[in-house]
Amino acid sequence: MGGCLEAMKPEIILSRTTFKDAREYIKKNVREYHEVEPGYKIFDVHIIGVPPLYVGVEGEDLIFPYTKPCHGTFVVKVAGGEEIARLRAGKK
Amino acid sequence: MTEKNEQTALLLLGCPQVPVQTSMVLYLAHGLSERGIRPVIAGTTAARKLMEVADPGRHYLDEMNDLDATIDEITEKKRDFDLCFVFIHNDSGIAYAGTMAYISKAWVYALIFGEHAEELAEEIEFPCEIVAAKATHNPMPLKRRLDEVMQWAAVSKR
Picture 1 (cartoon, each protein chain N blue to C red):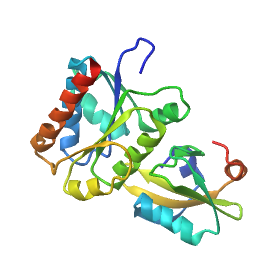
Picture 2 (picture 1 turned 30 degrees about the vertical axis):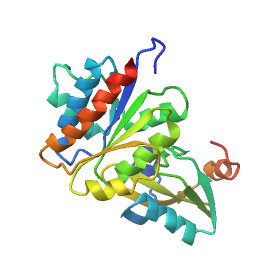
Picture 3 (picture 1 turned 30 degrees about the horizontal axis):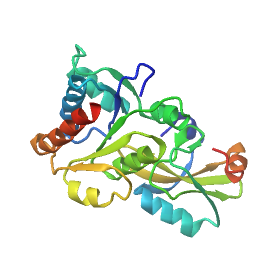
Picture 4 (picture 1 turned 60 degrees about the horizontal axis):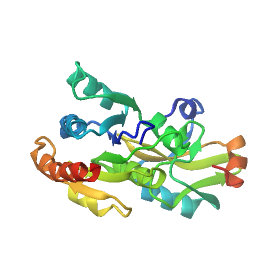
């Protein structure tokens, strides 16, 4: 996991799944979600996959897919901080 | 894609758990170099270490970079490549190839191998050339498919 994200001790919602299942999870379970382009960066990690890719907002937290080359895709929840405003503004 | 007008190819490595990856990367890097295309490798630390140990004299390897740093450079439009070969044997590999097809101007080749090569190939829904073979320990099936692509790369350079 990216060093910065790991230090934030994210809650792991889904482990070792596929990027498609991560997409479906966020779409079905998070009321507010935003479509981002592949490569969109949150803290020190890129959102990896085939469009559409979604990042969810739940209160002060972000919920997003995190893909590791060896272990598949995880859906993680972490305090969003200033990333939430950037996401809502649709900035790259 | 460089200022010197030299053609470059990004070789994006997946998890190195399937044995054929390391030898196929070295083979492809050599073949590209022979055709005047500079190979640039991006991968995880473990994948890069396997390369470094396999080619200590750097006969086949040229530039090697961190995977995330390379994606940073491409998304920030600081760098791009003419060709991109993504090594795939799991869902993450498909995800990385789809990302490259979206963020890079390079023509993407999805090199799919391992036990589930055929099933993974069916998952691809983005523009790229699929080079798939059920190869886990023996690289020859994938090598044969790759040789067809290498010929194409030589033709495109003219």
